[in-house]
Image (cartoon, rainbow, N blue to C red; front, side, top):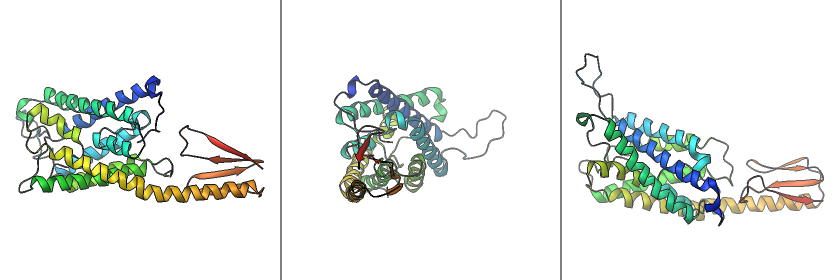
Length: 299
């Protein structure tokens, strides 16, 4: 979910613009699904048998959002990182996974995609069925302060999941869409009744603009962004820093042993990092900014 940090020449790379387009499309899809899930189609007098209350339940919303985000991570992860969320982009910037030059247009097109996605569902839905179009607001008896803290917590957990699942240096052995999607599902189930479980400023902005409903809207910017900042700092300068130091030590020790001319057919340095011996030692450095870059140490 996090493409490699880009060089000064990134704006000359066509992939830069493809990534921006990917963020617009991804956020459009995310908002379209979010807004469509809450629409109630039961009790329409068209002669068809319909079940009461089949749309918009917490389980439907949580599963729909979790599966949708997982799909976007798989489809758009290699293209843009599939942030589809300004809070995620801010977290990736702090964690030094993307540059400021990329973060700014990402956030801009995420907002545009959210407006377009919410507007699309508004336009194709009968007026009597739109409801509030998934506008987020604190639940009954939930204060704005409580809502901010909840949104901050939910987003911080999601960001930790994203950073851990997509950390190329640590080479996770699972598909990132699974932990990210299931984490979002659990968080939406947990918070949909209290805050609406936005975790995404763009997700809250799109419906709010279309429906002109702004009650406590600031909550859904302050909470998620604060959670993203806290979580990314904790990961980058806490968890990952310790793990990176351990990995650096193991790679340095492996190089030292190989330089001594030891006979190692294969040396497992760390999870997924392997050195193969054949007169030349190939040491994969996954922290290098170029893919498939190898250091070669001759005996």
